[in-house]
Length: 161
Image (cartoon, rainbow, N blue to C red; front, side, top):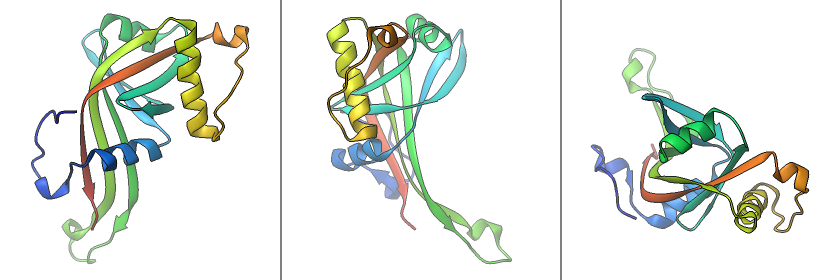
């Protein structure tokens, strides 16, 4: 995957794919950035990564799907806040935070094939439950939209202070 834009602070850049994937995999919530009629729209959402694909789900009607149908280009972001590093009492600029984050760009695809929808839900459930095989009742599947984001690029940043 290519990097979209170089970071200004190269000392904070995460460039190893294994580290970018680790941060993605350990995150519980992904922030999905979309465009809604010319305005930014960001939601927190559960997800799971499989290779260069991120699987997500939402209600089968609503603003998220409307946005994705109009404009499938998206931005994804996850972060881990690792703690505050206090500075001196006299210098507020001496305070900092430890963190790691990943930002990616890709194209969202609403999945319609039932086999693929179930696969995506299995991947998500395995991440959060640790269990790989689930049965999804038809009436529940009818209420859920499954979509995937095929990532084109990932960048990462950390402050290991």
